[in-house]
Image 1 (cartoon, rainbow, N blue to C red):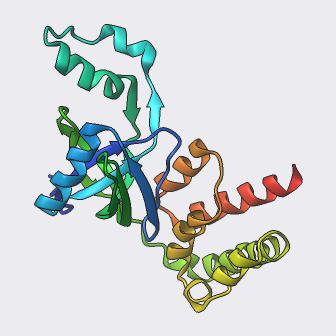
Image 2 (cartoon, helix red, strand yellow):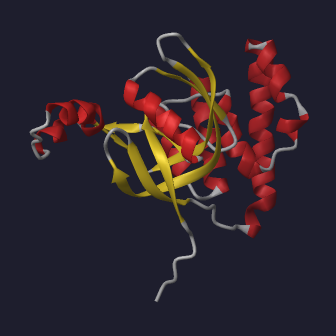
Image 3 (cartoon, rainbow, N blue to C red):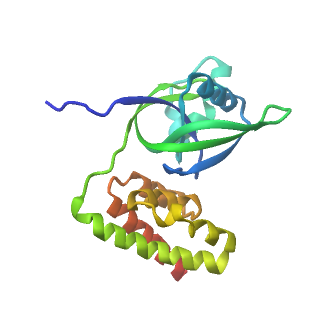
Amino acid sequence: MKIETNPTLKVALFPIPEMVAFPNTQVPLHVFEPRYRVMIKYCLENQMMLAIAHTKNTKGKAKGAAKRTNDDVRNLNKNQSSYEPHKVFSAGACEVIDTTEDGRMHVEVKLIKRLQLVEIDQEIPFQIASCIELIDQTELDSVQPDAEKMQEIYTVLLAISEAQSPELHEIISQDEWRNSSPAEFSFKVFEYFRFEADFMQHVLEQNSVSHRLDLIWQGITQSLQL
């Protein structure tokens, strides 16, 4: 019998098309929909983490959903039935930086955990999900190769940033970047270097540091060839 050792966590789920968020990064959000403003307040009041999830477009599947008789509930659920969140995403504490006169929020999310969806516990007015933390596999024989691959990637990123953005070059030249572990680096790189959302989602789902670094290297080299 397998004993479950990974505890379940409950998070508020914010599905955003084309947004893939990684642990150890910070994501600014402009929250204007009423239900998501309620969600942010709920997270703050209940000390619940906010998860940001890239979505799959499932508009074609929405027709088969059970009909609801309550128009308000149907309208609230309209977008959530059209866009299904991917099952792996990142979550962290949210902080309201500013609130405009009309109620829109400028929020910053400090992402700390990579999670895998177990089930959706609540749909309306916003989603609350039960999740488990996605942990990397331990690969002792890959420590040195991972460090070498990270250095290769880092050297290329320094060259790219030096040629294209002096401000970015200054940021990634700092000790925080140079002294990152391969695992930290494999997430942190996406704070400033962006790729197609589905590619980044594929990277996020890998539970091997080596696999993530290999994918990042492939993505960079392919971009440079375009």
